Image 1 (cartoon, helix red, strand yellow):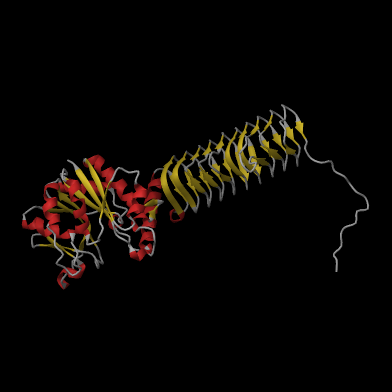
Image 2 (cartoon, rainbow, N blue to C red):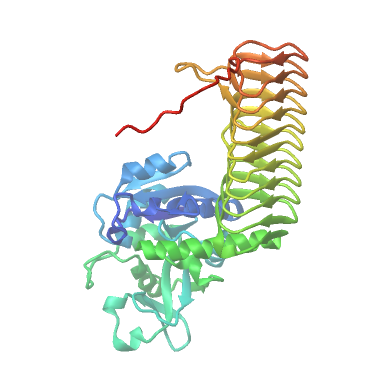
Length: 458
C-alpha cells in the first residue's frame, strides 16, 4: 500500500509572539516539524512508502532552509483559508496514493505506532479518524455519532449546538483518507460555516453520504495529539517529551537522580549502570558506555564517553572522545577534537581543544592545551599554556611520553618536548627539548638588599 503523507505547516502561530515560524520552535533540540517528519518516515517503513508533502506558508523559506535535507515535496499555501484548503494544495501530488495521511507540523509528539494503526484501520478503503476523549473538550471539533455508534460528522466547536458541545470525544485533526476519494472529497469542500474556512473535517459527512465506512483509532497518551499554539504549551510538551525520553533511558539501565532535571536534545546511546546527576544536558549524537558517572550540571554534546569514566560537576564536552576510566573536571571544558586515551585525567578549570591526551596522562589544574599531541604518562603542571596561535596561524605542540611539565610553563608552538624531558616551573619554552633534557627558560632571580617599598603620595 502506497501511503502518501501531507503535513500541514503553513500557520503563522501569532500567539507564539515570534519571528520564527511556529513549526521551527524546538522540542528536545529539534524543530517541531522535524519530529513530525521523523514519525512520518518511520510510519512509511511499515505501511508503504509514498511522498511526504509539507504545506508551508508563513516563513516558507526559513522552513525549507531548516529542513531541506529531507526528501520532501514542498507545497506553498499563499492564503491560509483553513485545513481543507491547505490539503487542497497537496492533492495534485497524491494522485498515485492508496491512502493519504494528514498530519500537523505543530503536533510534534505523535507516535509512528499510532499512525501505523490508523493507516491499517483505513487500509485505503475506509476513512480513518484519530480521536480522543477529553474531560474538557472545549475548542475541539466533536465526533457526532448516530444511535448505533457510527460516526456521522465532525462539528467544530464554534458551530456546535449545546447538545453537541456536551460530547467529550473530539477530533484530533489527524486522519487517513482513501486515495481514490481524496480529490472528490477535498476539492469539493465549501466554506459555509462561522469561520468561512474550508474545513477538512467536512470529508466525514461526504464519506457518510457515500456510505464509505468511517473508523477511528485513539492514541495511548493525550500528549501525542496535543498541539502547540503558545510558548506555554511548547514548554508543557517539552517536559512531557523529556519525561518519555528519561523513562526509556531508565528502563534500559540508567539511573537518573531527578528526571525532571535532565534535558535530552539529540540521539543518545547508553549502556548499563550509568549515573546521571541533576541538571545534565545531553545534545546531538552522544554515546555513553557502561558504568559512567556524569555529575551535576554537565553539558555533553556530540561526544563519546568510555566505560567507567567520570565526568565531574559542571564540565562541558563538545565533539570529544573520552576513553575508558578517564576523569574529567570539575569545571573542565573539552572542545572539538579532544581525544583522551584510557585513564587520562583532566582537572578543574582546564580547557582542551583539538588535542590528544595519552594513556594515564594528567592535566590537572588551570591549564590550556590546544593543537597538541601529548603522550602517555605525562604530567602537565598547573597554569601551563600551549601557545598555539601567532595571531594568524595555529601551530602544534608535541609532548612525548613521560614528560614532566613544570607549573606555569608556556610552550610556544611549534615545539616538541622529547621523552622523559622536564620543563622547569615558570619557563617559556621556545625551542625543542631532546629526550631526558631539563628545559629552563626564565630570568635569573636577583635579591636586592635595602629595598624601599613605595609609599602612598598625598
